[in-house]
Image (cartoon, rainbow, N blue to C red; front, side):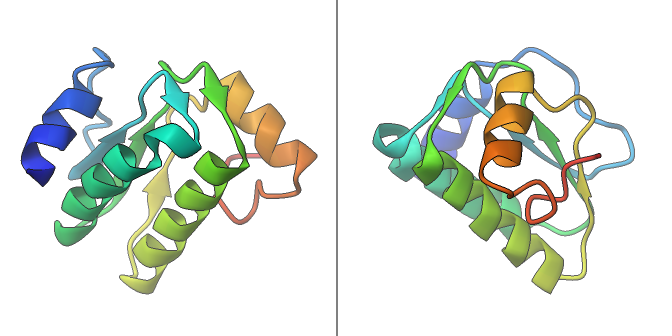
Length: 111
C-alpha cells in the first residue's frame, strides 16, 4: 500500500532528483493536514532506504502547520540516521511558512 501512495505522491512532480542523493522525497502540490496520511506513508518508504535525502518541493503550492510538523519529524528521523537532507530548490511557500514559524533550521532549509 505504501508503494502505491509513494507512486501517487511522486507522480505529481516531474523534476529529476539530485544525483548526489540516493533517496528522493518529492512533495505534492499541497501538504496540509488532509494530505498528511498519504505523505507520511511515502516518507516511511523513503526513510527505510539509506543515504542522503533530496527533498524536491518545486511542485508545492500550499502548506499548513501540520505539513511543516510532518516535514520536521521527517528531518529529525533522517538526522537520527546520520544522513543529510538536500533541498535543491526549496519552494518559496515552504521557505516563507518555515520562516514565519521559526522552523527553517529545524528543517535544514538553506539560509
